[in-house]
Length: 269
Image 1 (cartoon, rainbow, N blue to C red):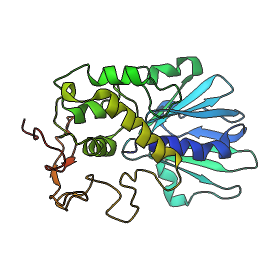
Image 2: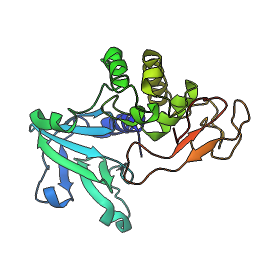
Image 3: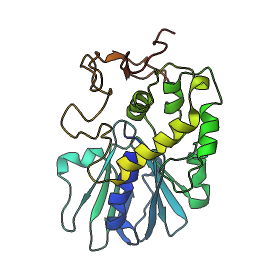
Image 4: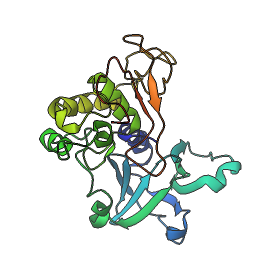
């Protein structure tokens, strides 16, 4: 699933193509909004809150999209269009007058509301580490709110901090030397929050750094533990272990860890 830094970078891609532009055509190809027509609307801005993308229009309208596991956006230059074989996958089509067209493909969430009501989609979220007004103290308090909860589950909870997903939850636990199942109450919350902000901002803003947590861009070496099951730890050589996700339980996703570098309770704690 794309994480907050992925969506942040997506917004940076869409802004120069769409922001400030009027639409020659704007369609939402989902049942709930199939009759809506955004043609003639001017796109004011794209903004992100965690994994949520918000597109504001001058008609006091905001489009809310979420990529989840299947969604993507692509922009094609003026005079071009997507291959017709992709037409069934298009959920959003925003065509700029005499300019590019942005397509939202296989988006599982496409919602439209008055801009003043857009907060309904994000009110439940915790502070976003990629925002300039990120409140680290609130985030740290959120981490400690349920002291017996496994720290990997805390990092996955968007009510704690908006943006980190499974990759960051696993990598942050490794970088802090924490067993993923260590109770949150035993964690230095302030240090964990500071590292989350630092690493995610680096990922989102430095060219070529997207989700490269080791600093090594070579295939198979970009991450410390994520996706490296049964391979030697890049730090100590111990075999990386993995437990599969539990279907239907959002707090028990596939989890990787190095038993040597991340001492503490295991998955059966």
